[in-house]
Length: 131
Image (cartoon, rainbow, N blue to C red; front, top):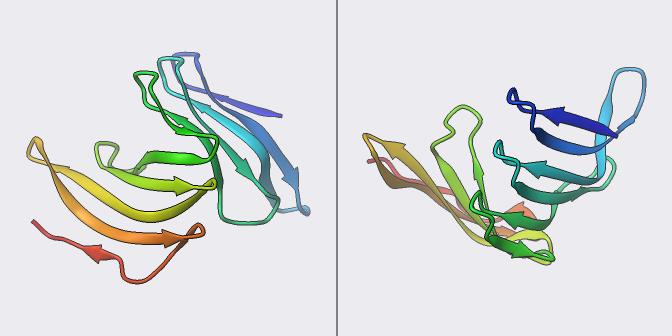
């Protein structure tokens, strides 16, 4: 089991890695993630060497659960633009349905892109909007 922590000492994630060969590892099994305030964020399941991710539960930072037992919504932020976020619909633990990505510019959000997932795989066109 591997645990990672925020700089404030609170736990960030907990899960498993498996060594594939001498040069690579893969995540697998149940992974749990937390917000920097200690509130649980999500539970995700990874099958060894397989994609997509299976989303089990997701909570907003306020503690409100918006994904329960694989059905509902999640949102993700970009690593390099943490104010931007994408909202995904989850059905049967996979990204299924439309998604919307919002970007922050000059203190307001605008719709940046839209698209659709089926069975955890992007399907059809991804549309990108420019302000």
